[in-house]
Amino acid sequence: MSVEIALVAEEAAGVRTLQRVARSGHRLRMVLTASRADEGGSVAAAAAGLGVPTLPGDRVRDPGLADELRDAGIDVLLNVHSLHLVRPEVLTAPRVGAFNLHPGPLPECAGLNAPSWAVARGHAEHGVTLHWMEAGIDTGDVVEEARFPITAEDTALTVSVQCVGRGQELVDRLLAHLDAGTVPRHPQDLTTRRYFGREVPHDGRVPWAKPAREVLDFVRACDYGPYPSPWGVPTTRRDDADLGVVRLAATGRPCPGRSPGEVDADDEGPVVATADEWVRPRRLVVSGRGCEPASVLRAGDRLS
Image (cartoon, rainbow, N blue to C red; front, side, top):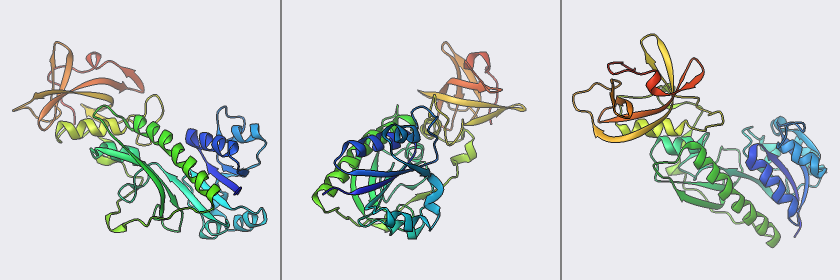
């Protein structure tokens, strides 16, 4: 069964979804996005290349959009990586329903920046979920999900990239369900729900007083390099100046008797004490410029 689809999308995941829907047997009627057609590789540029009309992404907050969707005969509204809250009137306008591709497992990782929170909290696995949309944020019944392990080397970026790839598999499954004429619904157990907002753990400061594993996890959770991180670069203070800590590495060596944030050095360069082990800075930012830790830190320095 062919359906009429309105896509609300941003970022690379949105572009890939747009291309997938366009190649399917369904009809992509409109795209809502904050991007511009003159931005290379953007959702708007991809839509323009296919001759699909676009609307501003924030129109989903306008209840008047509901009548436009009904008048256009839209069967499905699909939301991919757009953070605008969709009005209830808009959610109920499509004939079949509205769906969201969430870059996290539900119900335990709802809300914003799910890949970063998963890494920061030391989760052993993460996932991506395609669910029915309702008035609550990420509370709707699950259509499909995919999960994958997180390693000690993963950053928020590498987890996000996996979410994009696995998410496209879920989009394919949704399109297959639409072909078949029935989209499954698996209610979430909301008693286990955990919602994450815009806050940044530790106020964005490197928590040297925590165990090394937590310190390393937090810095990796902020790492979207070379792209900007939604949590920014973690900072620490030396004397009267802030330093950005882009990357750290584990040493596995205990640091008994050393104060958290105390700097020492070995043959490989500077190391910093945490609550239990030394960690090794691999990349710092000073006055907005990246630099090698050995050019900045000296044994005896104190970071806070």
